[in-house]
Figure 1 (tube, rainbow, N blue to C red):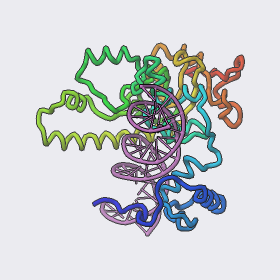
Figure 2 (figure 1 turned 120 degrees about the horizontal axis):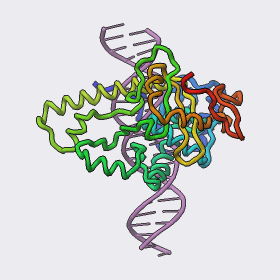
Figure 3 (figure 1 turned 30 degrees about the horizontal axis):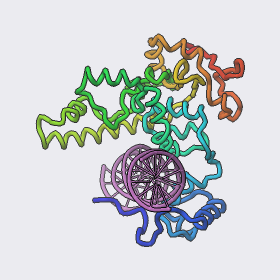
Figure 4 (figure 1 turned 90 degrees about the horizontal axis):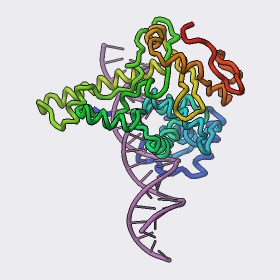
Length: 298
DNA sequence: AATTATGTCAACCGCCCATAG
DNA sequence: GCTATGGGCGGTTGACATAAT
């Protein structure tokens, strides 16, 4: 049984919004604030679906939207965050004040993908294309297709630390956007399955389970205290530093590149003035750059 | 100038999660 | 615990603009 439609589609406008509709929506939200989107259209005198109103407001009419071209720093931040989070546009947008998930998603698909390819980096995995090609040749049975799989922090130049106590769940694996299991990849790339029908059902169920698990992980990640530190250099020698739990931290401290990277890490939030109080508390101004000074193993 | 190809991005769709009843 | 509902998200579509032929 499917869900009932979110609104009476027969009596709603679709397509581009008119200036008059925009003004009605703006006026209504100014007067009443963002409330129940379902009832808003009727109250505001709009022949639109509530969802449509919400989208229009969030993606276009909100007064705090930045609009205009993305800066180089924003580009790099998006790339780093995508390397860490995959296609979690809302999470990425949460780290870019004044930008919407839709805007970032479009920008990624139209600009950044191409940019990464021109750099010789695979936009999905954030690994060198040569490496990908080599890996494909060596292990052609793995097929991630549309997924955004092994986006290891290592590959993206990202270090990860967990500050939250009792959070044992986070490790590299939890940071990687997941879609298909290796078994699934084996299945799909070969183009055949050993058994046709039951495996398909199983596959579907497995996918649903994985999707559920992934969402759970994304929720957990989104609850973490994210401290971003992105270097201004092109794609290396800096880090996007995230805060996670002690267990993950201790594991990650075994990664040799980490301390050197953190020593050079530049806090983009502070550098760009995203921190309302000027400094995030973990960095200091050094030669004009807000650099992290807290050692990782403290 | 007309036609076709390509790029951009606002808007929509369908699904899932959280939550109130 | 179950169901209905609203909100939110990611993926996709399609209209429009611009470039190329």
